[in-house]
Image 1 (cartoon, chains in turn purple, yellow):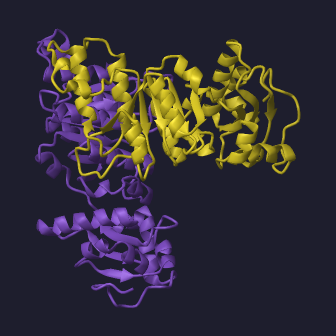
Image 2 (tube, one colour; image 1 turned 135 degrees about the vertical axis):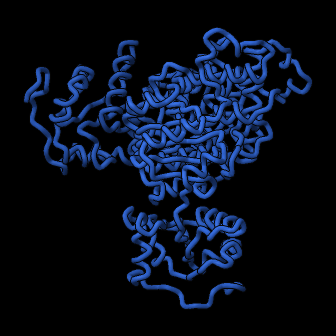
Image 3 (cartoon, rainbow over the protein chains, first blue to last red; image 1 turned 135 degrees about the horizontal axis):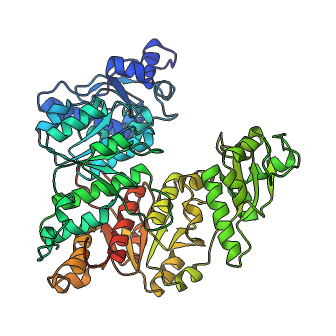
Length: 308
Length: 308
């Protein structure tokens, strides 16, 4: 049963031990904020955390993963995690201990204590991002995770959450990102006004995703496709000048699930863009709308001038 | 406190009463199947259920809503629900009674017992649908609800669930549809093979959403945009003949969250189409992928030949 390289220390088996309680405290936002640490739960999240950790170390950073706790059965099943964890403190523990540490009832045999992943806003903006996803008062951890995952899929350069948004290190949010949290820079700690000023100063077009917006996202996509693919001079049409170009560097603003963006937030944006609703649905879920918006930008920004 | 038209019968106050337990049994699939009834919970779902009920009655149907249970406070707050419920049996109840009936801890003061909404597959196909969303072994009620809501937003003509998929009348699924369940026809009760044969016979192009597909959805979108908007003859390019046209009548197949579509299901499809992943994400959530696919078809099918 033993695997070469497996730590031979005793297996943590007391769910009430102080060290276990100490890790479990990362379930609370105030402790996370104080320590600037959070918990990644389950094989997928820990795998991505360890990969990001190795990449960070390789590029001269201090690493991301503080400590890993795993069951013997998990490492028997997924020995590649043991290789990935090379150089990271690893403690063997029972399922009961992991359940006591984690937010999920069943963390599937492995959790990792990780450092916060935040990057400074200035650093992100100096890298001349093409596409940012900005969450403004998004409150549901599942929605925040879905938006972050969609941003990763669409190849966004970073994800920004205002102070008024849910904590992206909330266990449910981390879970909803399905590992994407470790794939792209996250910026937190700013209120909306300072953020909007910085995005504007960096030359980003701010598009507000707004169900009541007068600009139809599909119109923008058609314009963009025509300008990329067509022969005609449609981009120079009268009236076109005031419409945003999806191919420009863009920061999408996504608002609160129930209320959307507030009027002062809408006013700060360059344009208010609606995802069209073709059926009877009252509105789109914010995660769904964000996916459609981010993919529309990605297609306009990344595709060549001719289809296959 | 009393509102004109409010039923004056006694308020149901015993959460352990037989009638309450009887409604609560709709939380189980076997009882739902036997009665062909399910529970809509909360003001948004009940509002949509009552609107669909009135439309159904108006067009000669037998109606959708069997009975509504509500608190006095809820009807005081949302008197339009009382108007909508005109002609439907309405019983006043306490919050404790509603909580005992419902799956949610807090059904926000109102629930409705509804008839199943299924439509026969033949009826749906005879109406010459342009866009169908087909769930094949989708297991998570939240994902099923998200896909149905996205299908409604994208103006799909119907949603189909194979026998191997989650029950769309599961309380969590109903909740995830955010009322969209009452907006478009739902087809259930078929296994994959008979469904695929019927879709093919109806002349629908079957597109499998498949992360390993060799056709890139963005290529199809660019082709479609060029054919709608462009001046060039790209649609007649060599090799183009074997690519699907997003503007054709289409049935999208969405597979299981973990495994995707099985090889025999992929083989039954006309084409395997991947939503491109531009970042490091391993894959897209099935709800997210479905949204992008359905919106791609909607744009290609519904837009005119010129952008604004």
